[in-house]
Length: 544
Ligand code: VG1
Ligand code: CO
Image (tube, rainbow, N blue to C red; front, side, top):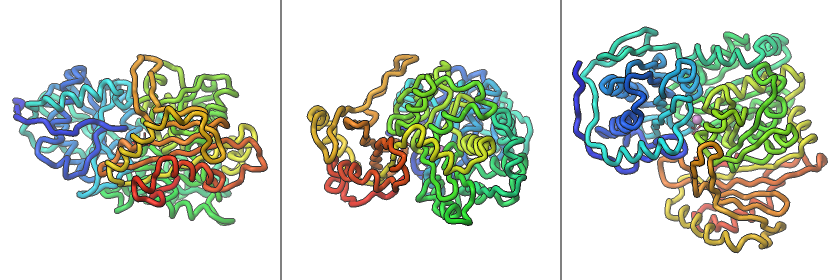
């Protein structure tokens, strides 16, 4: 079958953000739009020619069509072998797992993660490299540069590949292997955690759990692992059926979008444990009875308890967190005598540290936690980690959290999101903050004096790569922080994220409501940035 050469012209704005290229479905449906981006990947990653590519997505609207387009283009461009999840599905962590296990040269992952799906909602595409992780900045810049000069793409005039049965097929000269999207991943999880102990917890009869798959990709993974392999009662996995529009919901596991699950954990009859994941399965929310574990605390607690699980029995080598994530994990690393790192937002910045063996665990405040088992954050992995801890420590979630605070102190933390604000207002707000930076140190803001203020820049300790303008950081003399960033995953207008934290060493003051404990800093943050005058918003849309 001869490749067809299709003439095309560049589209503006095909620059990947925090995690790939995310746009409205309608943008992706324009003729040549997806094709240009895929060709730019193939043109800039010559190792794919003659190599192995993994393809899969979170099953959202347009996933199937996009997978067929990518298969044709991969074949026309001389990719020797493509591994594709049945139905065109792979969770983001499973894609990373398959790349590593089968030594592929990369993956194309289709997802807009926590963003809603459907014909009027969001779609996304990203490239993962041979380590299984999101392409680093150097690669995404090259892909973007290529999209700006593209003149042609290659495809085949061929019928759609049958993706619904596990089989090995050929397309032109390319071997297409339709694989079970769950198997490799489930096997990896079983190698890391004490499945017998977790099964024992479920069998004990005294432990009640629910996992909310939010009608997204983790449904099939959670059913297989929690219900089939670990013996959790039928019905443990809620909203297990993956739907192209996530049932009309917002597949973002947080206190706002998974409110029904949160309610199930409240009161004397509340669940012992509840968890949820996002559209593409890389995020996690952890809840106990009357207890929400912030993602920042979760990272710190996993680090402090890792030795209780088989996969991390030897201890951890180091921990990294994204800059806006609370400093709780740093305290654990210091206590363990291992290195800790502060990286820009986005999983791609953890890849080098993981590859170099400098860190074992890493996480982000945005409900992302992971380890060197993969090169993506991993929602179900975090859930299984917690289940393993609950089984090993025989304590409730709240007891584990409270004990952790007693030992290390509590980092009160909150994030306030102002969504869909006008871009000019948001950019203006950031620019005005940037201008104030030189004069802030030494200034009294509310009850605290500013110690440092900067626009976060990061030099990768492994390859020296530099990333600038990664968020405005204001640090007070007592270690409290306010951070401002604009989201890099949205598809409409701008989203302003304000991250606020302070440390509380006194156990007598560990049971406050974070919004109250941080009230004074929250007010300072609003005032300093002029959030209301500049965005017209009196209150955030989402508080986590
Ligand atoms: C957000 C989060 C970031 C995360 C990214 C991708 O990015 O803040 O921590 O890595 O989403 O997560 P931003 O630029 O909107 O703040 V996922 O689960 O959407 O792939
Ligand atoms: Co995600």
